[in-house]
Image (cartoon, rainbow, N blue to C red; front, side):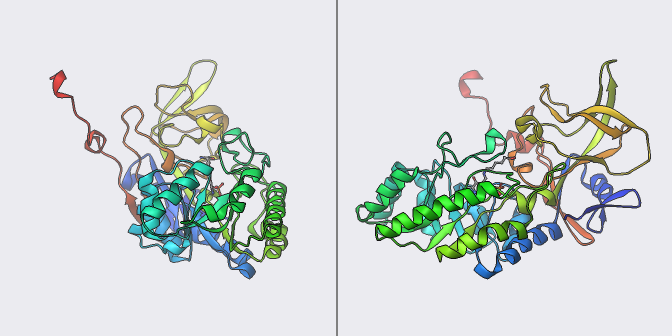
Length: 418
Ligand code: LLP
């Protein structure tokens, strides 16, 4: 469910006509629905209510302050992967006791800042990282909490670039090493081993990979129990898939039904890290048509947004639905929807049947709320698009369009070239 709907031929976000926003803030732009964000978060919270898990939004999916403030207001914590993300959570005064920190390459600065913030725990991804946290914590005379991120060696049927749970991926610690670490836990005098973490990949639409991973983790928890080790938390990661085209992903309820019995058996406090499930369908990317080009072989609908704004189609061959903001009943044509960037990979859709559009018409690339703006860049010296949040019949820019001056910030010509 999302709050981008057509009302008599015009696309609305909640109660605001999307073309009104496009005209006011200019294109390209990102638009987020407050109501949809809250609805998706609530669906997960409700589905798992009997375990009362800490739902830590994976803010790598969308770190806009308005988005994270909305989710924090409704009880979410955050799964972070950098000191930058941590500082953003501090800006909105998020509860550090609901923050978990993954990342295979945490720097000393990041570890120190997170220890000072007293986050819930670090999700530790390797033995050397554990040594480093222990060393830093000793210097700081403290004992941070840690969850070992287990690599369960479970393949998830998703795009190769977003699968993480096999030993061919850089993530997590293999079970043998993890067991050894736990057996040697006394060696880490400045670590409190609080739990285990598992995350097998993203955009997973079936329950089986999750069930398989959780079963493996439970087996491992039992092995640890035999070794005399007890834990407090199990962090089951994120990865729940959403509908981009015709996927039939499990609902939050189905997902809960499949895994709740296993989670209950552990007796541990549960942490979850959904990103895309909450934000994916809560955002769209809006562009204006510049030209329609026909080279005799193909038609190209050239728009003012590019792969620098939304790179999922070019990076993952990802499908995103495209709709005109105004349905005018025009006949459909088959075309590629492309941006102005100097690369053939700069497209939002290939061979898509869309109503004929002309210069000045607007279109929306749907399901762009997760891994959209956050992965954008200044490629081709293009300022990043603004982000707008809609709530009911109100809307406001939550991040301005980058200006040329913004892009030049910190850049200068070395004196030896002058
Ligand atoms: N937890 C960890 C440790 C993760 O690495 C991720 C995503 C998540 C949670 C959230 O996963 P989600 O619920 O959003 O599937 N840029 C790619 C997706 C990369 C996912 C990275 N990790 C894309 O656009 O599809």
